[in-house]
Amino acid sequence: MVLPLLIAGCASQGPVRPPSLHLPAAVRGLAATRVGNTVDLTWTNPVRTTDGVSLTAKHGAGAMRAEICRAEAFTSVNCTPITHLAAAAGAPGGYHDVLPATLAEGNARTLTYRVRLVNSVGNGAGWTEVKTAAGAAPVVVSGLRAKPVAQGILVQWEPGSNGVMLRVSRGTDTTHSTLLSASEASTSNQAGQSSEGTLDTGGHVGEEQRYTVFRRSTVSLGGESFLMDSDSANVIVAASAKLPLPLPPTSVEALANTLSTPEVDLVWQPPDDAGVTGYRVYREESGTTTLLTQEPLRGFTYADKSVANGHSYQYWVASVNSTGEQRSTTVTVTLP
Image 1 (cartoon, rainbow, N blue to C red):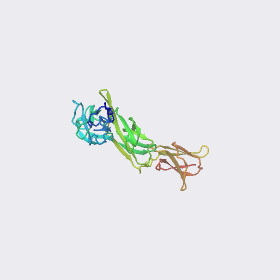
Image 2: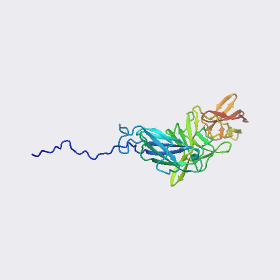
Image 3: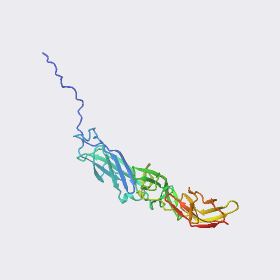
Image 4: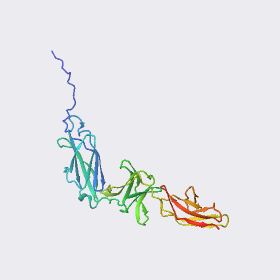
């Protein structure tokens, strides 16, 4: 008698998988940003091991850490880390590296970083590399200052390196900022000395505003281009900032014109003040003062036709800006 084969429970389970090595996979999105004498590294930690096991599972990689190496040229596959950092699966990673003087000075050259995650027993997968530039960074902007003017906020600084782009932004930080300028611009101060600057027409007098300025150079190394930024310079225009009173007009003259209808012709010289938005003309007779120009004038002359022969008048002209006005000296004219 032939017994039937017992096949229940003997279905194929597929090929046997080798045990996991618990090696965290390579980091993703590794980037390096050079600012002054520092390099900021950023990346994203993996969520699985090299053989697909979740790093957060019971049999994942255990407590992990990131290892970071740095060198102008690596001579072998392995390297000696400059730091070890705790790491969590799927979390962003980062490291702020303060360069030693040997890497922060001299001519531009390539600098390479390596980053990898290792498991609880110190084993990891291959390194991920990113390059940046070693050498001297652009010089920090000096003499940074900001002041309200009629058109907005004037931000100025001392002249710097030629051929180096300069970036100016307004905002509380790099995430919440508005780029105002990405080039060199020249202005001239009242002393006639050359300075660089930009006019922020979106800046509001009476509001606290923070301005950040830094220089940026692009260097080509080994067929690749790298950005090098200077440390930033910052200046704050306080909420209480207001335009100072304008400088007064000068050389005010009043001439009696009696060729036809009596009138007094006034002329003056504008002050050396970019904040002036116009001029008001005032007349006084027998202790009574009259504002002759309800809307400030943009020009530098005015004809007063509301006068009479045989009367004596006093005049002055006031410069106007958003803060107030500043009057000139008084001139007197008598019509015959």
